[in-house]
Length: 322
Image 1 (cartoon, one colour):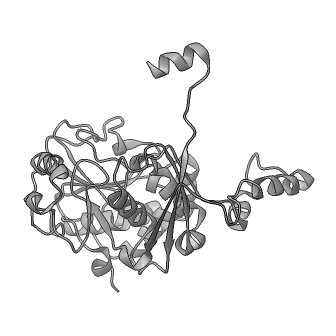
Image 2: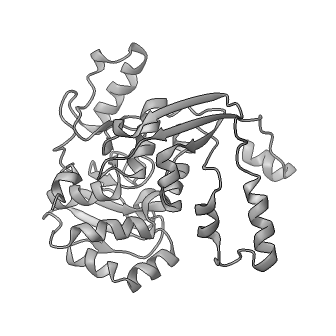
Image 3: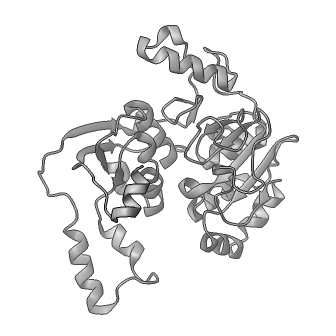
């Protein structure tokens, strides 16, 4: 009905959003990526925690993040219930935009930068909510359930319903039944059938470069179907120019044309039966990857690569330690 009203009136009624500032301070450990940060945030605040909010990501970690890393977090704000996620524009933002197609030039560039600077939150402003997270709390993170908030660190165990809040037990039991996982077991070592690196969340050039730099000399485990799908045609072109497609193919991954692919079971890229997929995408809902009984575990691209090589959920820090 909302789509009907939008098309009929060309307008949409929106309530004014509250703003939650989420600061992540300190320095991330090696092997911890932007995907781990946003999965940790959603785990902490819940998939409905952002309802009615805009998320402003800030702090030392986001200051150091590249634009593409910032995009990974902002991209998944909606999975945390927020209407929008953003990082205040800064010099890193402006340099990322400089010289790109359709970017302003010459005097218009200087005028635009001044305008963009005005979009940033005022110093000393108040927020509707403030969440502060220390970077050393965050480890490589993997979802075990049927929404992005049902996640644990790689060295943790799958939750035991009786040890959780009473209000969460029904959803935990539902997730465990669907995912065919046993409560209390380590998440590490869970066998996988499919590995997918791609999507608008983690199919960017920097994601592919990071994985390619680690997997030389490794091979996808027999019996695992592993595919890599660049997030756009531009990313695909640049990756091929850098020879990344050959690195992945040499390791046993299939290199595909750019697109959505297995993120939402586009074209033939679908799970079969109850296959379990280690995926760098953004949603792990029931049936998301094509099969009504297919199972999805979200993680960073390098964690997906580690799972593809070992055939099970693994700690990429140990697999690629050399």
